[in-house]
Structure formats: C-alpha cells, structure tokens
Image 1 (cartoon, rainbow, N blue to C red):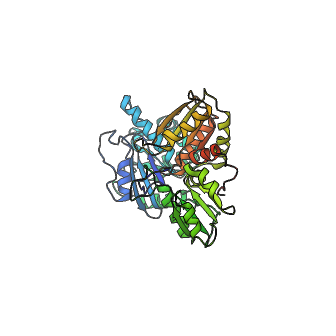
Image 2: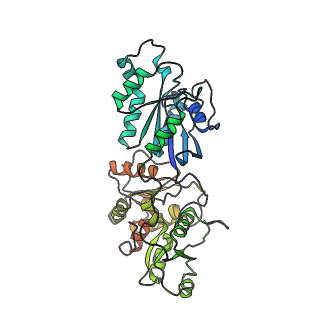
Image 3: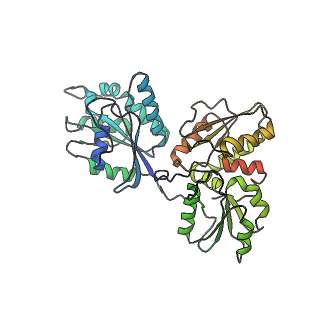
Length: 414
C-alpha cells in the first residue's frame, strides 16, 4: 500500500520554526507564547538538542506545529549534528521566527552598527537563507527587558527591511504582537489546497479502489485514503469503496458509471483495463503528487525512466519509517519492476523518513513516495534540491502509471 497507517495531526498544519543561537531565549519565548511548557528551559546553553515539535491551536493562526530548535552556533561533534537537525527543521518551516538576542551585544553601552554586522553575522546568514527559500521571516529581539532595543530595531529595519518585534518572556511583552504578525506572515491561501482539484463536484459519484494487503493493518486505512474520503464528503460527492477484487461487483451495483475512480497505484493496470470507458481514472499517489509536490516535474521525471540503463542508480525515498514488509511498493515492487526492465545491475538505494541526501549527483532518477506524512513545504525543499542538481524526480504513482503504460490515459488534478 502507498502511504502511512499512522494518523498524524501535523502533516497538513502550518509549521512555525524558532531559530537563533544557543541560550538566546527561544525555548522560554515559546513557552510564554503558548502558555504551555513546550520546551525544557535552562540557563545552560544547548538545553534543546533535537528539535521539539508541538502540534497545537494558536490564536489567531489556528492549527499549527511549533518547532523549537537547537542553537545554530552549537559546537563540537555533537553540536554539528544538532545544527544539522536545525537545518532540517528550517526546510520544514512555513514561517521562520529568527531571534536576535540582546545578550550578543556583550554589555556595550552604545549600539554600534559595525559591531552589530559582525556580532549578528550568523543570524543574517540564516535570514538570507530563508529569503532564498521564500520562507516568511519574523524577526524577534529577545530578552528585550534587559536593554533599550531602539537602536537594534532601527539597524535591523535598515539591514533587512523587516520590523523586528521586541519580546520578553519574563514580562510577557510583545507576545500579542507576535501572534498578530504570524497571522500576517501566513502564506496566501494556506490550507486551501484541494486534493482532487476540480475533478469532481457535489453529486458526482466516486469509486475508491483500495486493496487491503499485508501492509494495511486490520481496522485502519492509510492516511491518503482517509484524507481523500474526508474531502469528497465535504464536497458532497457520493462515495463507494471496494477492493480490487470486488471492483467488478461494485460497478455492477451502481446505477451509473462513476465520474471518477481513484485507485491504489499498485493496481493501476488492472483498474484501467476494467473501468467503464466514461470514468476518469487517477490514483491516491498521483493526487498527492500535485497536493504535496510538483506534478509537472514528476511527470517529466517519469518519462526519464525510459533513459535508464543497466548501470543506472535510482534513489527511492519514502517518508514513512515502517519496518520493511513483504511486497512493499518502494522497497520491493518498484526496484523489481525497474530491474526487470533494465537489468539486475541497476542499483536502487532506499532512504526513509527525513534521510534524504544533500548530494544527489550520483543518481539518475529519484522516486519519491506520496509524502502524506510530510507537509508540502518540506517536500518542495526536496524537489528544489533535485532541480538545482538537475536530477529528474517523480513519485510512486506517476512512475507506476508510466511503467504500466497508461500515464497519458489517466486524469490529473488541476
């Protein structure tokens, strides 16, 4: 089966990351902002190690995930690993909160712009990185109860064009302004993306073909199926579900052909051969290719499959971290199909979870899963990395449609 069996409330929530140097007050600020003990706080630098992810409702933002990160100035071998985790969190951030701590000014009596340029060099590097990624950034001046922040705010405005907000977790100053600023920083139309696009509307009949194989634990559906069903219900569609084996009986029971059939990609060929001529056909993975990623780029990448050779190297990236199971689509079925077509010497490397290489130049193709466990910002960061290194990329459903020979016949969301 494609997708995850574990419901996650965070996959489609706005991700807000808090970034800054160690002991700059990030964790204390986050606790003050939420009114909860989200992170452990201490005077000792480096208290936050791995990023802390907290899914919650934050007024007036709504459903979001707050990410508290280790300081990006962490040192030593372990510190480098912590910073790497912070960089990964930065790839996931829909909005970045970047801390400029008054402690960095080292007790200087008067503010000096030249000193600030050097002292806040690392913060400015991270700011420019977020700008390059088109990630909205909110600048905060932390521990603002210790000194007058007027000069620093003016310098930040001149340097970045951003209005920094002075906050104090000790007094609670600035917290309401932060909430209001985060609401303004939200990406336009965030959360309004639609899985099925304009393929169906109220009253349309939709058939879902959902094989229940060894990878689908009893009593549960995978997340893409659950999310798609929920959306179709909200649209007012009529929904019928069946396994591949029961698909003929399901069609016979209907008074009219379904407007759309959505199938698990693994049975694309069978469903295509047995569907009514007038019914559109797509798969959960193809829908999620558009919902979470870049469908045109995936289609282009799928067509590059034909250029593979017995000496090619393919990276298969799945987001779930479940233990390998028999007939796993990423670990067994796709590698088998590729090797059957191009030869056993073709190499298929498998990564899972957030293990995705920085250097992709050794690969001829990347095949990404439907990514139901990740939100779109992080998936797009992978796609952008592949594009920069000029490595073709596709996803499970689009690749299987191409390998089955029906990519040009399936329906795509717009």
